Image (tube, rainbow, N blue to C red; front, side, top):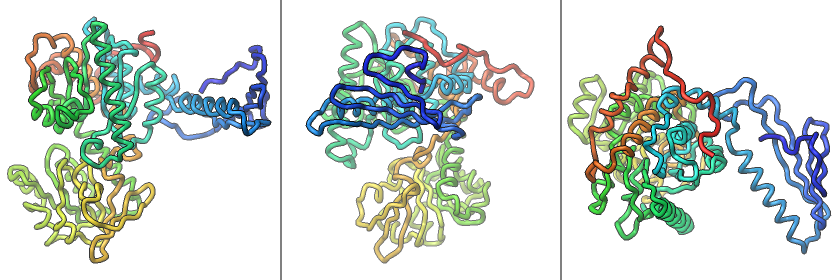
Length: 514
């Protein structure tokens, strides 16, 4: 937060500013019916509240709102105090200009392609993804590439990412719309109040699309989960169709493919080369790091792990755990995936039930995106087993309460489920993707290439949307990313010892449009 007012400025009538012994200050407003004071206290020597450290460090302040001499029957001072607290909370949550400039510097490939070539001038953007720092970088790049901040709507998927409040605060400070739209509202696990709030957000997104169209703008949706096709046609959260979409997940592609009424071009980032060969390495790394961090006292080396799923993510996680020294048993319903695992030297099984009958894992990993354990499988789990899901549905039997268990919260760790017979299993995190649970996950540089590729694909889609047929286009992303020279830039920037780094775009993370 910046200090206001400047001590040298004249104070408005009814305002007092006094220095405090701890280096802070108190700002008091006399409302005529009582006094409201905001005390600011510096917090020296705190660790960075972002992935990147800045030099000099970003100063941080603690604020307290106090009232004095207020009559109980006078609502004005209390209302002012609440308004001040809300404003301070929002202002204080946002990343500082220094923090954003440092983040921007950490994503040189994204900066390289954040150029305005006129392709986005008459487009609005709906961006739905996890609220992590690299999402800040992506939307700042989207501004640089031509999207106006007032025509950007950011939507959080609802995971408890570590700095989601800071991301939300920064989005609001830029003039974007920002809200949460969670998949859980249509799978029966959300409360009535959560469904109501999601419906309100969905209606606001619909209004945003209509307003853009009324102004002659087309709408691009960059989505992690296929929200435009989520639910039946008459029960969707978002009913207004955008003009083009860029889908980031396989589950989202499946939803869009199954929706007969989708009549827009969709580019496939989910199965693109850049996500498969670059992004998933970083995702898997974040999964294993989060797993080790959430149970720091646990021994891994030499112990048995059951890994459910040997797909793009599951195979990488299994290999990383084996490299740590774990003895990994792999289960996959796809026989070819099972063959690959076996020929890489993994112990394998056709089903979780079979594997649990002959092994005693201390940890079960889920990466399938589907129900990975049945009620019959639960009866075979060893007492005290840890369950780590890196796709939301793998252990939904427990997280959604579809079997009767006694639960107890383990703050910061997860939920202990007492199973029939007295055995217990600990579901790590909140039952959603563990690598996103109170964690930032992937380094900004680690997702630099993927976010740059997403921007390249978005610009191409906006340029060519009028000529693309409705439906999912599988190979377009690979072609345009390669033609843009991203892989050469990636190699030169991060991997080559002597080559020049990627060209930089803007020098800082400051204003793109006003």
